[in-house]
Structure formats: structure tokens, C-alpha cells
Length: 118
Image (cartoon, rainbow, N blue to C red):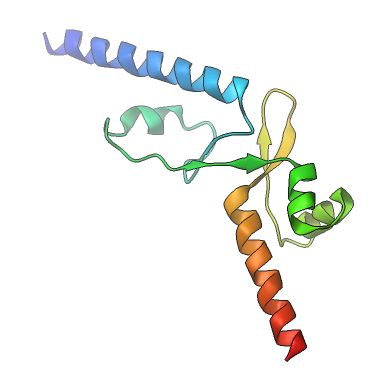
């Protein structure tokens, strides 16, 4: 009987994973699971049902550039300098940036500019 319950729970997890996979494929720019490494199927399956997964909004290079008031080449420069990080989204392997990272970067630039103007 215990094995039957385990299989039922496993089937439920597989169905949830398939739904999540479809959501990520359909709208990769909207969400990114944070703090969980890629290829973490076994980790996700072992989490309690009520485990709080934090969702993040992703923005494109173009959107990030617009927010930072720079061109897209400058965004690549920030990445190369280690000032910004990105995630790769399927299926086209596009670079996306966490909106929270962009906001933190904007605040750090504002603080830097305030110090320069003192």
C-alpha cells in the first residue's frame, strides 16, 4: 500500500512538472525559479508541497537597456565587467535579466552619481 501511495505522489509531481515546463516554454520572459540550480528535477521532487518557490520577472536585453537608459551593447559590457548577470531561456537560448537585479543596479548607479555630485 505504501508503494502505491509513493507512485501516486510521484505521478502528481510529474504532472506538476509538466505543467511548469509548459509555462516556462510558453512564457520564459515572465518567470524564473530563483535559488534552484538548473537541472534540479530531483531537488524539486524532494521539496515539500508547501515549499515557497520565489518567482522572478525576466526582462530582455532591449528592456534592460531601456530601463538603464543605455544601448544594448552597454548591457553586454556590464555583463562582461561582472556588474550584471543573466539567465538563458529556452527554446532560443536568449539572454534575460532579472528585473530585481536591474533595479538593484539602477539604485547603485544612482548612489554612485549622488556621491560624485557631492
